[in-house]
Every structure is written in C-alpha cells, then in structure tokens.
Length: 107
Figure 1 (cartoon, rainbow, N blue to C red):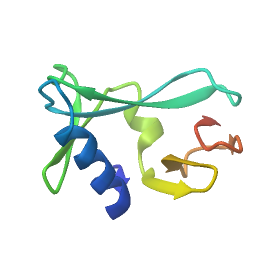
Figure 2 (cartoon, rainbow, N blue to C red; figure 1 turned 180 degrees about the horizontal axis):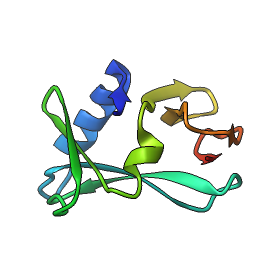
Figure 3 (tube, rainbow, N blue to C red; figure 1 turned 135 degrees about the horizontal axis):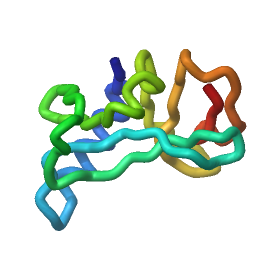
Figure 4 (cartoon, helix red, strand yellow; figure 1 turned 60 degrees about the vertical axis):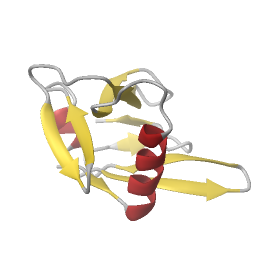
C-alpha cells in the first residue's frame, strides 16, 4: 500500500516521540484542495477510526481511511531537507498530474 522511506520513518518517529499528547499513529489522507484538485494530509492521531486500514512500519502505525486508500496505493513518502525548506514528499503512481510543491495532485 504505502511505503515510507527510512528518512520519512525517522522523521515520523521523531514527531511521535516529541508529541505532548498520546499518539496511536500517523494518519495519511487525501482531501480536496491544492492547486491540482487533491492534496495530501498528515496528522498524528490519538486513536484509529473503526474503518481505517492499518499499515505498520518498524514501530510506526499508519492509519488510512477508506476514501484515501485507493488514491494512496503504491505511494512512497519521503522526508527531504534542503536550503529551501524541509517536509514530506509524496511520489504517487496514481496521479495523472501534480504541482511543483509535491503536495497536490489530480487522479
């Protein structure tokens, strides 16, 4: 389903370990918006939803809702750091188009 690169896994683990609130896992989802029509979202979750798909990576739990799951199939998530900033980058084989920032796509 979803792949986290070692760099992304390290970043997510760091965010979870420094959270002030209890964290059950990381939610990755797709929602309307962005310059290409759909955008990726990520947030730390205290608990899973009843209909979530759960993906485990070396102690990190990902939650994916049923709407987002088909659009995230085969996605690779990386964490990049550069002079212009740092953040998560999504490589999505299901996207028919994307924007330069890598945070928005169309299916």
